[in-house]
Structures are given as C-alpha cells and as structure tokens.
Amino acid sequence: MKFSAEQIAGLINGNIEGNPSIEVTSLAKIEEGSEGDISFLANPKYEEYIYTTGSSICIVNNTFEPNKSLPETLTLIKVDDAYACFAKLLEVYDTMNRPEPEIQTPSFIDETATLGQDVFVGAFAVIGKNVNIGNNVVIHPNVTIGNNVSIKDNTVIHPGATVYRDCEIGENCTIHSGAVIGSDGFGFAPDQNGKFQKIPQIGNVILEDNVDIGANTTVDRATMGSTVIRCGTKLDNLVQIGHNVVIGEDSALAAQAGVAGSSKIGKNVLIGGQVGLAGHLSIGDRVKIAAQSGIGGNVSDDEVVMGSPAFNNKEYKKSYLGFRRLPRIQERLDVLEKKIKELTKDQK
Image (cartoon, rainbow, N blue to C red):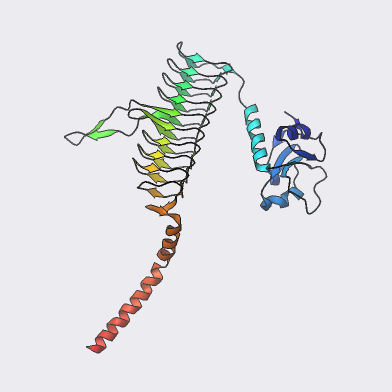
C-alpha cells in the first residue's frame, strides 16, 4: 500500500520539507533505505547516513538542521519526536498486516465457545469449552485455548502459543509463539518416604490490558488464586514467571529472567536479562535490577541493584574495583610476608 508524504505528515502531525506528493511503500533503516522507503533519524550518531540515504522520506526532529546537502530525492518530515513518530508508523504498519477476519479450516471451536466480531482463527487452532473471545482478536494457526478462557478485544496470539484453562487475557495483549500461559506451578511436597507428591495447581493466570508476552515465555498458574501480570507490563522471550507471582503496571523483564513463586514485583520495575529472583520476595516500585543479578532479599522502592547476591549498584561498583585488584593485592601481601619472615629470622 502506498502513502504520500502528505498523508504521513497528517498522521504524525509533522511539517514537510520537500515533495508532499512523494510516495512510499515500506519502512527501512536510514543506512539501508532505497527508493520508496521511509526512514527516521533521531540519534545524531546516525546523521551521516541522511546525506547518502536512498530513502524517499525521512522523519527527523524539528531541531535537525543539515550541515551539508541532502539527496535531491529526499523529503523530510519534521516532528517533535522522530523516534516516537516512527514507532507510531510501525504500529500502523503492523496493524495493516493483521489477517482479515476468517475462520480457517481445519480448526476446532467448541460449540459452547463465544466469538466476537471480526475474529481470525487460524488453521489447526483449538478453542475449548466455554471460551469467550472478544472483538478483533487474532488467533494464529496451531494455537490451543483451554476451557473457560476469556480473551478480550484486539488481542493477538501467535502460532503455537498455549493458554491453559481458566486463564484471563485482557485487551490489546500480544502473546508470541511458543509462549505458555497457565501451565502448572512448580508445586511438589515430599511424603514420609521422601517421594515428591504433586500439589494440584487450581488457580489461574490473569494478563491485564496491553501486556506483551515474548516467545517461549512461561507464566505459571497459581496454586490457588491468580498469577497476575498487570497493565502495560512487557515480558521478553524466554522469561519464567512462577506461581502466584504478581507483577505491577508498566514493568519490563528482559530475556531469561526468572521469578520464583509468590514474589511480588512493583510498578515501573526494570529487570535485566538472566536475573533470578527467589520466591516470596517483595520488589518495590521503580526498582532497576542489572543483568545477571541474583535477588535473595526484598528490594525497596527506587533502588538500583546489581550483582549476585545483589546490592546497591554504587556500592557494587566500588567493591568490584577492589575485587579486580585482588591479584595485585595478593602479590603485595606475599612480598610483605616474605620480608616479615626475613626480618623475624634476623632477629632470632
């Protein structure tokens, strides 16, 4: 589909410098752009590419002033925030690529399930008993939706994802391929013979609105009650969320992070890749946890921590400087010990 510079400027409230009628059909990085592409420049680090780009349109900040000639074929659209406006265009482009409403065959939809308007169900999808699906929902091929699940409007579930029974998915959520929502929590108890006996996991998972779940991420159902991922939270690929965990609004967990059961994470928390959180912890609001940190205790609001076991990042960096010097310190100690022995020997 073609869009003119004039149409795009209207969408992002921008001002055109160049040809308002020029048309584009695709989006590209500024250093890789060619005729018919639209790109953006927000980071000055990439400014050199705007003077050689082959893109037809480039979105730039209002503050941008070229220090040499731009390509004659390039039209600029100036906005307050080039990055945010380009992200908006990506969102529009992604929406345009949503499949048209359709129920593909073969697929299985239980007769007790309820589907809203303009729903897409891909081939080999399975939708169980008493499922309630809202409007404009996209369920890609090979998705399994268990009994009694509810999925609200505009949610997209990508191929091969699984939502177990009784779970609740909010509006505008995205669940990527291979993700599992509502698998059993890790609940076992040893009997008198030391054999592990399974504890039934009878709770569910609740994803509130605007939650993103990355590929191959797992969110375990609660033993009782609910595991809850609150509004706006984003989980990267390969994240593990244990049973009865609650994650607050607008938090983000990077790939391979793991949260053990019953921990509570506040809002606006940022957790780096490969972070591990022990169970039954309380992580405050606006906390930042550096990658590969191990969290074994509670963390208060607004703290920034790193290390394993993790502690205040400033103290950690000071400690790390000392740690790096340990070999040299050891060498100096060895020399001092040798000298002390020599002095002591002479005294004897």
